[in-house]
Image (tube, rainbow, N blue to C red):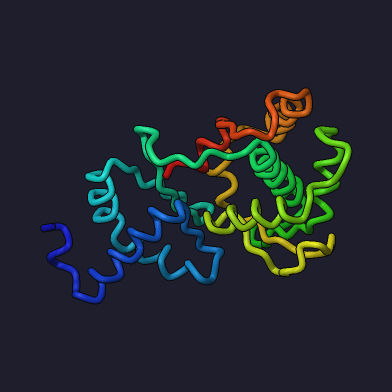
Length: 209
């Protein structure tokens, strides 16, 4: 394409690599050390990325204030359908993010542990037992793939195991304030649906690919 002709070959190769990464992972976060260079590369060639991805039917959303880049699909194609429990955990992560962020300075990372998630889950009274280890591992691995979180400790059987929640959570779960998040969770608590796959507004925001 003409828009790539002025790039050096190494930048063209990097451009292709990052396009594929966005298509696979949806988010790029400046706070994530492994993706920081990719984040700045997109800013450098913002116009080229936006034009190229728009041809494929995607929209590139750049939030420089929070250091997050998200790929969305206005036609609602290529969504990930979240199970109910996955949607609930995603909302819990947003709730915890907002709670912790109010306690921290702007530049501080938001770190929670598995015990925080389990405690919040039990308080919702959706079930009378904690989230099982397999479900927790699979769900957190999914959100890690989308660069919403990072696991600092691998032992998911330990309630003290820590998790970084990236700023991308505020784009994955677009709610105006924490009260609305609790209202969503209250709907789940009242038994709306079962563990079968369910699309929610929050899942849709995450699942733009």
